[in-house]
Image (cartoon, rainbow, N blue to C red; front, side, top):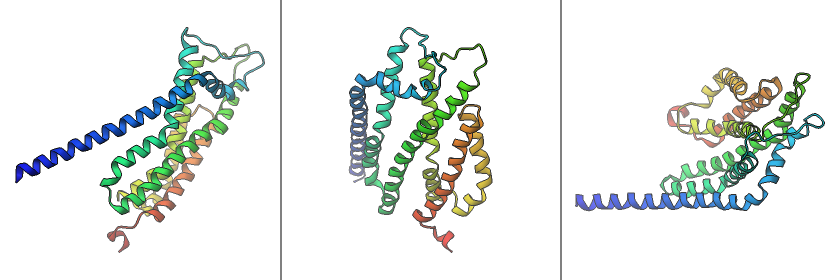
Length: 249
């Protein structure tokens, strides 16, 4: 009887591992497929990404490629990054399809809006960085170039800088989701989060100072949305998470 139970448990574990491998392979295949689709447009994607800087360079200035293979690898790297970001909804769906059968019904009701919100907030953060932050940052950086110095940015270093900036804003916009998860796990309560508001504001400005370039405008553009999103997270936690019996009492 014990041997039969052990065999059933082992078979269940193997079946879960097989399903996990299948889900991961589907996610990887989706990323690779999107990458192959975007590959012919890699140079156009890079031109679009470089537009916020090129539009603010002095007349006659241009970007340069210091390394011999940079003109090939930089657009290629960007195409893969865009494919990875575009595949996020499908990757999260595969994750959800694997995890959902093991969740309780109330956990599924909470996880669905969290997954959708996390995806939308990440995209919103990336768009915020591209359309609002990058033009202001590059306007500041090109405006403080010392006289007699020509600003000629390397395409690979520019790509690395922009990817870090975009990812930082995408991740920082996940603050409401993180707040709801913390409350759902019972680690904190909405009341405790309100009391910690002052510390969170200080932390937001410290993070903004580390992530963004050394100008006040870009730091404010990251710190202020993080503080607002923190408040939104508290409100969402109150609406989505049911209070525990000890809290309700």
